[in-house]
Length: 373
Image (cartoon, rainbow, N blue to C red; front, side, top):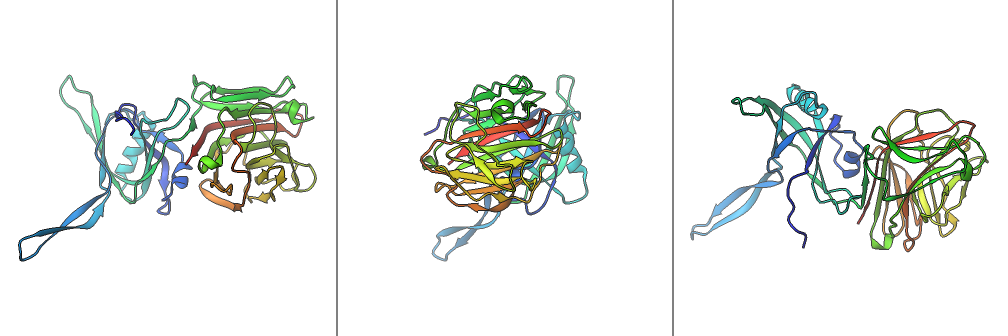
């Protein structure tokens, strides 16, 4: 039995834009862009509650049934600060005369480790008020907001790995590798982003590559896996990258890359699954790739492109049988890749970048997330 946990450290977020009525799954909420609502001091009770429907028989007994149900409003109390992006969004949403909903997320305080992430609660909310509250000379100016919850609350279990890459954070949960070219840079955190910079020799990944690999491996026999990354790349063409899972954590290695002939691939890893983007392919789209016990899976063209200087969210879900599904911005792309990798080997999350030209290439990552179970 888990020990009771306090609320100190709980955070509340609002989506940066309104959301469609169809957003109702964890992967769709997770792909949103979020702003923390600052200085929150109190979060009211919330959750499903049914109306009591009593029925009295003539013999005197009263029966109780469930009637209508409501997830209710959640009341947020905060110290007023309209320079805070989250508070300003919430105020704007409340003052709108429309019926547009925003996404809301509550991060609890039960992260399993310093590298993990806490339970998250997602819901669609309609901001109905944002009222300031003064007081006497010894009172903090406060704001109270009422958010009506429309739709089910989605509770997401804690994650084994959840990195936001804020300045001052450690990369101690990862192994870092860099090629021999002097321009290749070992992965590092700068301006609240993880930067992975290739060399510019344009010879091989061993020379030009830069790679981050999680230090902890996960086997599918212990539970299904979810991998999600939010990133962008500033620059131009002539780039290769791989994001997903690989089967080793001890050396620089591009798990899967283009064979530089048509739309064919080369797999260096024995077991790996992920998104590959490589401008050496005849079709410059993201490709869905996998290798199972040294047998290449059929690569799939996702039909999606990597736009320069545009943040995108890539997600991979692998079930306990090794079947992998791929998502871009919360929407599935391609078809489920059956037995994409073995269930008995340790899989390590990785991000790798190389160049396909004579200039360095950079991946800029804001979030990396892995959950098992």
